[in-house]
Length: 593
Image: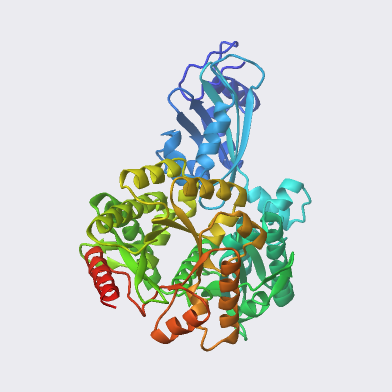
């Protein structure tokens, strides 16, 4: 192999000349007055290309060429592969290293001498790494920025598959994120007033888990078709992510967000399911022309507005404002503080009473997570659970709440004459269900604290178990064998199959509070509650109604045959000492009666 000592590293060769010398000879023969190094740099720049060498042992890259092609600072010509992570989209740097390792350079085998890898940068450009073995522990190659070539070929009507499809979402036929940025840049170059709206499909994860990926894809394809019908060819339409759509078009009436909502939020039927899609939307207004905002910055602002809309609840809409920038910084600060909160003991279990609706006596508690911040006070779960999920802390959160609940239950069993069947419920998230040591941890907690069977009740949601019902059934069966009871939370709000419900080892169904709260005003809600109670009775399951806000609802639920309820009508979630005081008072009242 020819020695390519472009970087001052000795890479062993057979010609006796370095690669740079060979290049210089070739160039000098054609143009005697042209400096070889300058010619090489000019050629690399014209081709949107870098030359690189990679040391496998040190995991060190060295680049030659215009570093702007890779989005690197000018002095970063020598960098460790880990230092490239901020330049690439998530996971891409790891994929590049895996490809480089595939050469297996230490074995000397000749089965594979070349590697190639297409990667996406953080600024949405595509770069193509291509390399070959050059010595025992070195690889050399080129890195080419493909974005300009792709844009030119597409604009000139090119038909090549990689170039044509690279900017198009294959499922919907809309622009993908890269295609949107290019098309938006071209549209915004024209004078005019434009609106960009990004719409995020609410609860798509539940839909995906219930219907399966293929049928969920059908939903997305149908929604894309509705966008085309509503906006035609005059707008830039895109599917930016799994469940996120975007429309950029000239401003007009009705507003873009209203037109999108009218098109997308009509019910549709897939595989026998009636789907009622709702969207959270973020909007940005922009003036086109020579000074138009860059399309990537425009999209960033719209997605920031989407997050603001989500914070208002499903189905919200928000416009970009400057104060959202500080909100984004606040989120980063929140995440940093949340990590510290897990270490410093700021996460606590609070307890909401569950009442026997027939007798009015307490029958158990549900344990709920609260973050008690030393400065900001109590932070409700809606404000930090999303961050905990994004940071991968849900298993840690579950462990904290479960351990605190079991210890509290043991204390109360020792101090009070608890009613038969008394329990504490703890929510079990999807990451916890998949955690390898969950069964052993639950078994040890129950055994070490001397809890009777069913005293610890673990609640799961429909979406968590329907993701993989067979695997969930194995885990839930093992939890019951370990001595825990199992409840299905928020029943009626997901997409569960009754056939699977019959196979899963539940002890309890929990009626979602949305049905209970609307029972008096909506006849359909009471019918749903009746149906759940009948189902629970026929399957031999306990039923707990959530959202019992007053005595009238409690009495009506009791008339319908519901034996347990929880809600603000009885008590809000209480700190451990207050929960114990509530427990003692309820038991005293029952004894006096």
